Image (cartoon, rainbow, N blue to C red; front, side):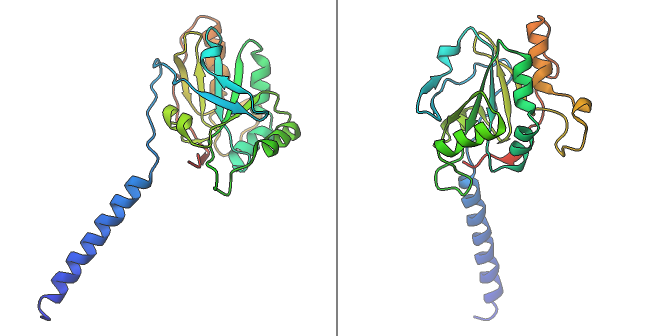
Length: 207
């Protein structure tokens, strides 16, 4: 019996590791990899006032989607620095929407009234939509807050990635390359978007 004990222990350990690996795999959100040029997934989400907004109603317009989480330091830093608001104001013909995909029950989840107050405090003048089931975030493959997507007039993805090239926030604002600003300016000038995709950074979306 003693001779078999180490082998049995090893087998039990191997089984436990496999079980843990499978459990972690199943716990991960199923995120799509949304390619540039692909159709942007449709959505129907409510804003902080309970009004339903859809992507379909915006066909013919350029749309920027920003995954947002007021409890994420990265998202909050950009709100404080007015990164998104100032970019939005430079492109007045663009529709800018924030999307909060934090699930209910998570410590980062806030109710629409709290989001509305946050928006007012930070000077956020664009609509923020709620996606508590995470279905829209997962359809887009939104990984971080912020994670940015630019959708063209035909409903196709023009840009997918980070807001800028400064994850640490150490550069002066004038030194940063604002990828969304570049994408919008290029498209509106009839030029190719370059880069059309970058690696998003920030806190993980709390699905």
